[in-house]
Structures are given as structure tokens and as C-alpha cells.
Amino acid sequence: MTQEAVAEQADIPPTIVQKLLAEFVGTFALVLFGCGVAVVNQGSIVQTGLAFGLTVTLMAYAFGRISGGHFNPAVSIGAALGGRISWKDTGLYAAAQFVGAIAAALVLMILLLGLDGFEAFDDRYPLGTNGFSAGDYDYAWWAAFLIELLMTFLFVLVILAVTDERNRAVAALAPLAIGVTLAVIHFMLIPLTGTSVNPARSLGPALFSGGDWIVQVWPFITAPFIGGAVAGVLYPLLFGRGADPVPGSGLNFGAGGSSDPAFTQQWNQQSYGQPQGQHQAQQPLQQQSQPIIQDGWQWDPATQQWIPAQQQPPAPGVPGAAGAPGAPGAPAAPDPQTGWAPPASDQTQVRPPQ
Image 1 (tube, one colour):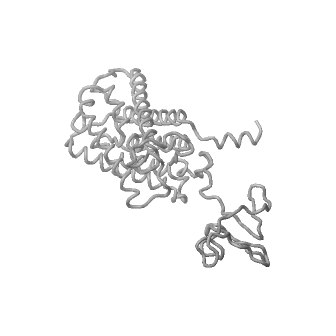
Image 2 (cartoon, rainbow, N blue to C red):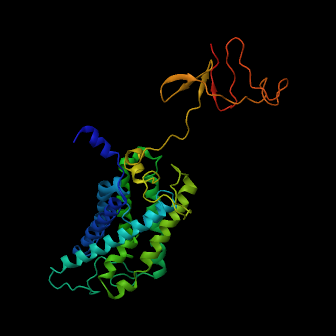
Image 3 (cartoon, helix red, strand yellow):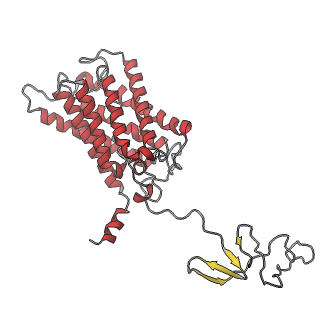
């Protein structure tokens, strides 16, 4: 493959299928490693927190350039309300994330069957589940709801900040900042709720743990969604936007945006040290240069040569122009010495002869 062909392929943006596959794999790894470490290490706070934090960091570095590395429906909701991704893509992302989490929980359950005494679908052997008054947890449901909402809000707020297009100085470290934030959140929440801040991560293990775990999963699905949504709304209001919101994002629920690379403004390509244009179709110039006219000739930028000036309507107020004193309706007369006539539009750049 020639160097030109490689460069051309590098400019092709990822397809929606590739993005969804990246979200599936990243969420699968997050649940498998995070919940797996929690189970085999009996819920060790430091080990479990680092497992979740390091996994999201590694997955973001691996797949951030493709999908943005959300791996969390609450993050996708926040990104959509923050103008970073369209609502159409948000729904597809969330579906891929939930499927990835459920698949990971199923695989984890199968692998744990190799442990002596482990029983599948037995609430005595939860798969890294979340709860508030089940198992070792003793926490009021309303407090669990509020703390999950608050921590998800802070988590998504950090994500939106470190992936802001204006924050290029730390762009390459964005996945690390996100991972450290998630680990710190786990250090605080593991003894209280087991730490969710991710609806997909909570639902997957609960489905294969049964009993009270599936009954108590509702705060860990609803609270993160609300926290992520609040962060997505407040961040651009408080700190402004690094770029225009993509079509079909924010509070605009109409059609638009989706996976079309000409319109999709993937936040990951702003965040992980890569210029936005590397993974998007080249945008047309916002404005074409105004014509340059001199001595009856006009510069043609396409052919890089002078051509006869196109006929311009007379400028208002110029002698000989319509409504001008002296000669109503007559065309603007050229200068008797140079042959140059002023153009009609004030948007045209004019260079009188030297």
C-alpha cells in the first residue's frame, strides 16, 4: 500500500458500526474487569476502584479516537445535551453499552462457575452489584439516589471539561484524568452503594445476581441518567462552548447530525490530542473570497489568472447610477483616464490601478 493510500485511509472517519463496536467492547471490558476484581477480591476498595479507573483509562486510549470512549449511557446523555453528539447516535451508543455490560456479566458468571461453591443466579453471590440495603450495604435509598446523582454529575462534568476543544494543553491526558476521577469516586462510594455512576454497569450484573439486587437496581439506573443530564446542560451554560453544537444535539431533538461524518462533531477527536479534522470530512470554506477587480480585469482564484471583469450593476450614489443626480438609470461610467468603474457591491474588494 502506497504512502498516499495510507494517508487517504487515515482521513476516513469511523463508521457508525465501528463506533458501536468500540462502545460495546469498552463497556464489556469495564464491567468484566471492574466487577470481576470486586468479586475475586471480596470487594476490596482500593483494588476495585483502581480496576474500574484503569480500565476506563485504557479503553479510552484504545477506542477514544473511534467512538469517544463513553462506555456509559450517562456520559452519552451528558455529551448529547452538551452538544457533542447527536441524539440519534446517543440512542445507538446506549444500546451498545447496555448490551456490552450484559454480555460481560454473563461471561463473568460463567467464569465464576469454576469456583467451588459458586451458584449462578444466587443473590448470595452477587457479581459486583449495586445496592443500598442488601448484602453488606446499610444505606437509605434516598441517600443512595442522591449520592449517585451527585457523583455522576461531577464525573460527567470532569469529562466534558477535559475533552473541551479549548483544553488542548491536557488533551492527551484526558483519559487518565477521567480514569483517576472514576477511581476516586469508587473509593468513596464502594462501602455505601458499590458505586454505579453508570446505568449499564449496574443493570448487567444485577440481571445475573437475582433476588434483592435486581429489585434495588432502579436508583443506579435513574440517578446516573439525571446526574449526567444536569452536567450536560450546565457545562456549556457555565463555561461556554469550545465549538458549535452538532445538529440534532442539545435541546434540539429533531433530525440531523447522526453518523454523517460531515456533521458529526465527535468530542473524542477534540479530546485525545487529535485535531478534529483528522477524522472528519473536510468542511467547505465558510465564505469565498470576494472578487478583486482592477483596470477592468477580475482575478480568478480557480485558474490563477486575470480575466475580463464581469458586468457589475452600478453602485448606488455613483454618477450615472440609477437614482444618482445627473443620469438616472444610466450605467456607471468608467474613469476617463484608467477605464476603471467602481463595482456595485460594497462586499467586493476593489483595487484601483496604481
